[in-house]
Image 1 (cartoon, helix red, strand yellow):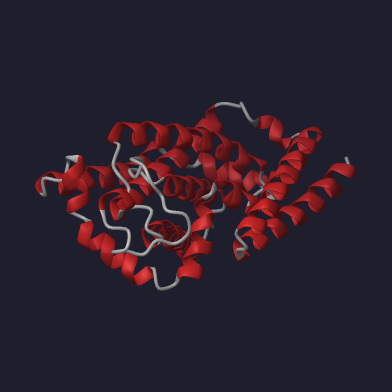
Image 2: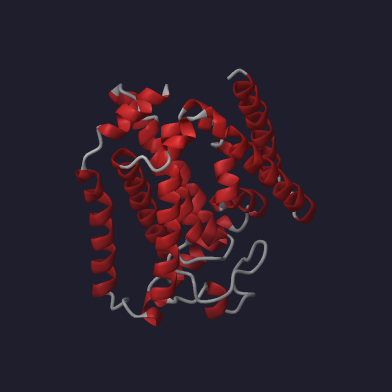
Length: 276
């Protein structure tokens, strides 16, 4: 799929795509309202049993979920997409706008709700914690979930197939992957279930807004200009150094895969840039 295909896919989007995420947000609000779960204390209590259930079952696979949950880190997730600066710069235009919006939404809602993390509420020996214990009062929404679904929304519509059966398979595959990633946040003991659901919806909306912004404005169209490739090469170098540090501190397979992706992208971008 070419960059023109991505532009065409984005141009076909209508504002009605916001209907589903808004419906889901309203449904969650109504659900919490009828369970008297709109206060911070009750919000955590209505999902306490579900948190322990998911955490207990996912927590058995500590190594797997700890690797998978790293994909909620933007520096890790985007390392697998940096190569599309060459092949689909329009996707990166949308991704940059969407990422900035997702950061804003994450900061705003975390400070608005001030929901305590599970480690602040429950005896830490009563549930599974994988990796560093997440502390503080910034549980809602899950920032990792926002990052994941912001990125997936941009990618989903960028490479949406034309054939209906392939389109259905593509959508459900990405939704399954995204859901698996975000619920590892419950598995590692960092978030409540509704934290990741709410974060996923906010992330999806951020991704859509980023796409519409990229269509209407040309703020990031310089990405398609090869003379700016050295900027991305510097980002790759910085990302690689960061990954080396992560590998030294926490030797995870996902870090090696991310590093390989960055090195391949570095080679490919240099190759294309040298041919200019």
